[in-house]
Amino acid sequence: MSLLEGLVITFRFGVLMIMSLIAGLINLLSFIFPPGKKSVSGEIVLITGAGSGLGRGMALSFARLGATIVAWDINKEANEATVQMIREEGGKASGFVCDCSKRDDIYRAAQEVKSSVGHVTILINNAGIVSGRKFLDCPDDLIQKTMDINTNAHFWTTKAFLPHMVEQNHGHLVSIASAAGFSGTAGLADYCSSKFGAVGFAESIRHEMRIQKLSGVHVTCVCPTYINTGMFTGAKVKEIENMEPDFVVQQIVDAVLRNQFWVVLPWSASALSAIQGLLPLPIADAAQDFINQHQSMDNWVGRQGEKKDK
Image (cartoon, rainbow, N blue to C red; front, side, top):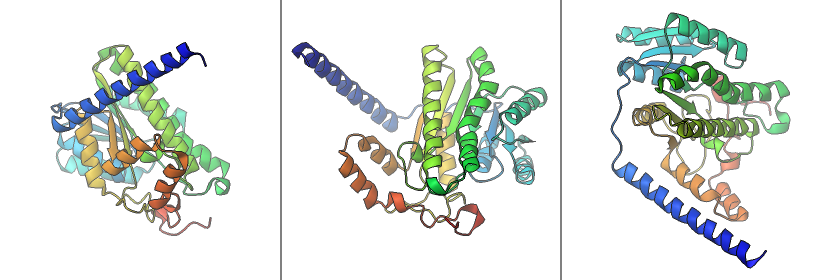
């Protein structure tokens, strides 16, 4: 390496450090002085996986703020129950059965929504699954389904509804990803890969909107650790409590109302993600071992309520 090349690298590193410090200061100021909240009254909010857990909680919360809810779920009965709960509170909601693992079914349901309800202005990609198996024990079709629901569905729903948002320069895309989208975890190879994809997709779309100067189209990426919704029953990371769904829903809704991009929960997960890339690999491994990260799925049973064979 020549002296000039060394100076250029040093200069770029210095610029990067200064930009990082400025970004940190901006984030700190935003935390101390958060932006005001926008109104979602009259917005059409589509939520995938609305039949239970976070999906149902978000549907009820946005309906209480005056939004019209479009509930998607593969489980017709659970989805209809969410719709009925909203209507009993005086809110507006419509339910559609949709298998988010199938692109054609997503496009079919999207067309039905446009025809019968209208153009979606807030899209929340929430549907997700977890296999809970170590990589070599996970059948190919289950790996494919994990990727189709947790990642690929975000592509198809966004492609279906983003064009109108772009045309109107008005809308909001929400990706319910995971802290597993920042750090690979033993026993979650397919899930982590799918959530890495969801995070990358959300970041890329945000930048596409930014460089097109579409300031009215916002993106929010939600990255929580384990939540007590049933999906991760039995999973546990030492030193980090599993979160309650109501708390997570509140944080997501608040982020959407403030047009906030990152929602990493809890704050300790955010701190760990921030420093992970700065630590030497053996120290990062030791830190993950300290919180039992790679054994956190050993007692997982999920919604079925019984431990898997493998």
